[in-house]
Length: 199
Image: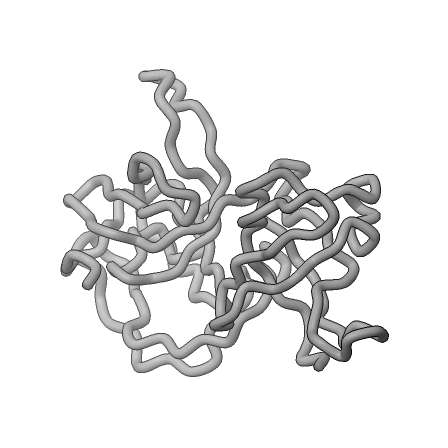
């Protein structure tokens, strides 16, 4: 098993066991309450973002999640989704948990150089109420995966640079890991110039 720490969303609770929908793996991962000590020895609430290791169950030999913990940033649980579309000075993230697309502005995307991420980019973010409208919006938007290979940087429409064609490997979406990996070439009021609807 092994392979390092994985991330996913608590998807189904069957009482004495449950399943985690994995971010980068095909099959849902079996989990038992005993593996969730960070949640008080009970299964995490449905739709919770979690990180965990995969081990072989000593009885069945089948893979299961172990050492299941919440994913947080500054004490606040992280949400994940896919950048869906951008409209100049704002955009929308399609949330993994479903529901309405989450509103996002370039100023909340410092990990992307102050630009909205390209459509299709996997992101992690906090949800906060907007100071002016009171409506929810994404904050501290960061890559949900750490880039390993990038193509040359190209200019943003409003200044600054952005990377295209980013190849990624699944890792926990934590600021300490992802912030150094992305170019922090911020430009005031920078927004990405080309967007396409997610396929």
